[in-house]
Length: 197
Image (cartoon, rainbow, N blue to C red; front, top):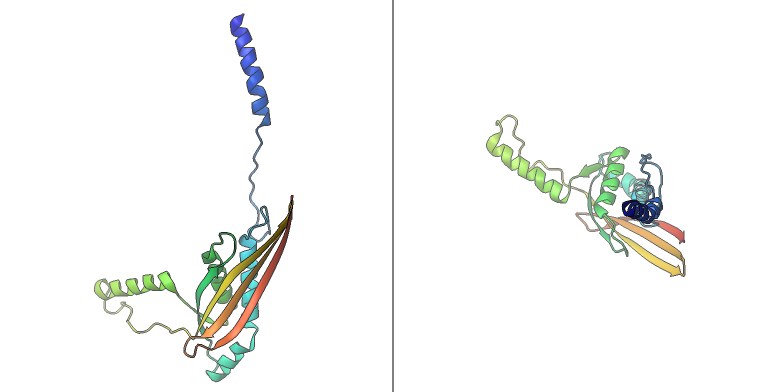
C-alpha cells in the first residue's frame, strides 16, 4: 500500500512538470524568405543590403568613366574591411561575401581576392614552383592589380521605451581609386526595425 501511495505521489509531482515543457518545432524555410525573430541584424538584412549597395555602386557614373578611359576594360575591385561599429555582434565577413557575390553576378567588374584568401593563393603558387611541373606551374608577377577598393562601416542606433524599441542600422560604403586615393563613389543603405513586446 505504501508503495502505491509513493508511486502515486511521485506521478502527481512529475506529471505537471512534464505537461509544462514546451514543444519545439523546427522546419526548413527558403533562404530567400525574410524571417526576423529577434529584431537584430540577420541574414536577410545582410543579403538585401549587399544587393542594394552593389546596385548603387554599379549604377553610378564612375564605372562608365573608368571604362571610357580604359578602352572599355572592366575595373578590378577588391573588397576591403567593412568595420562593425554597431551595438551588436555582426559577422562582417558574411556581409563581405554577400557583396563579393553580388559583384561577381553582375559581370561588370573584375573581383580581386583580398586578405587571407590572397595569401593562400600566393602560398599555393610558391608550392607550385617547387612541386609542380614547369609547364603547369603558375608564374609569379602575373596577379591582377586592383584599380579600386571598397570599404565601409556598419553602424546602429537603438531607441527604446518600456516594451518598445527602434533599431536603426546604417551601412556606409565607399569606393576608392587605389592609385590616386580619390573616393569615386559613396553609398549607404538604411534599415529601421520596430520591436514591441
